[in-house]
Image (cartoon, rainbow over all chains, first blue to last red; front, top):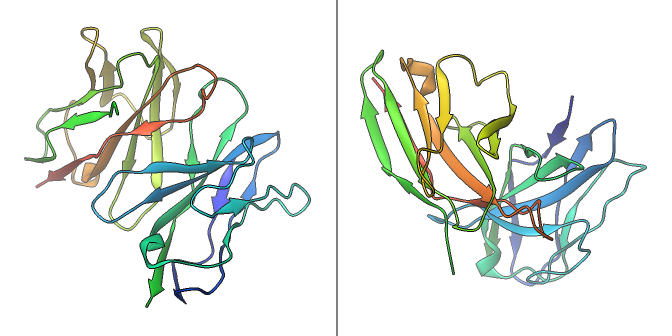
Length: 110
Length: 115
């Protein structure tokens, strides 16, 4: 069975400070990992996926298979980064189901 | 930019009643999904649909649930006899099946309240 764990329900940082949102997973095969974000009163949207290895809005995430982690990082947080962040896992293969973590509410303070 | 739409945004129903939640996926997408999120809990997968049939379903998706693509644009989730514990936000999603095949685009959700 697959599982995604986000240990922090709430995370507050000051503007300009680095931020790291933690995500650990368990899955027996080779998963695909994603970060989804939900801004206030908006829909869930994909932030980034590990396969593309890109930086979106200054965020990066590296898949560490040894530690089964996919932490999301940004060196300098901005107030507009305040949102709910969900880590998600999908089995490899065409358009498979997503398993979500419980989410981390990030608040960036001025 | 095309978006997934869902109607209604909020549905209130009595326990035991049937409800149909509607979704219009992005027009050239081939994969369709329903997820739900009970208040304060995780987003949970219910079912995926491809080529006019269910491709995967979770344990939550029991005989009380069904999905249908009645025409070329709508994708519906029916709950036959609602229970109090069906109260949740229900999200529809779609994916193209192309190069970024695993990017699922989500709708805004339907909040279902069962009284």
